[in-house]
Length: 192
Image (cartoon, rainbow, N blue to C red; front, side, top):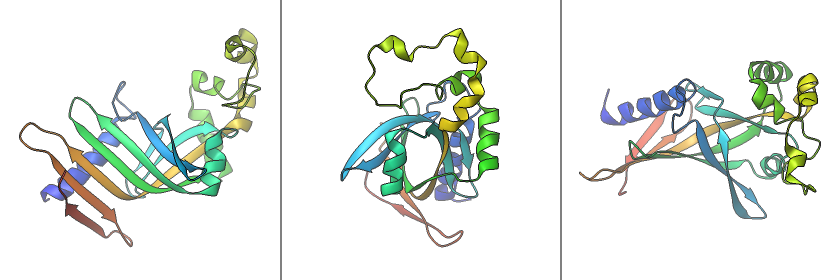
């Protein structure tokens, strides 16, 4: 395996590790979508990694602004950064809303109780509320936790390009990895 292939392997290994290792820097990552012709960024939680499909998954509230943005423009950039290793990954691709009901139900079933609570609120994310306390949970919320699935969405990002940057006192390294037709991968070293 050459250096380029090793880097790509390490990228997928680190993404997969973030699902298992508590506090892994890639577990929470940023995505940027387009809203009114301008970038709109936010942090999301990595929920699944599919190396073969070159994709990652996160969950969101169906009522959030992300959903309409994804429907209007499926271009996305995902940003991962490991401050200890000084590695930045910008992954570009297309973003889509999962439509397979069985898969959505399975992901909901796998979600922890605390995660499910996020989908119970009467107000959609970003909507004005009268008081911050309106968004706190009480014991009654726990009784009807399963109704939150109606607000639960699974979002997939399929990568078509990865921009990997390694910052080092010995000299920075940067490589662009393009996923072309099928399993064809093109590596290109560029100035950092």
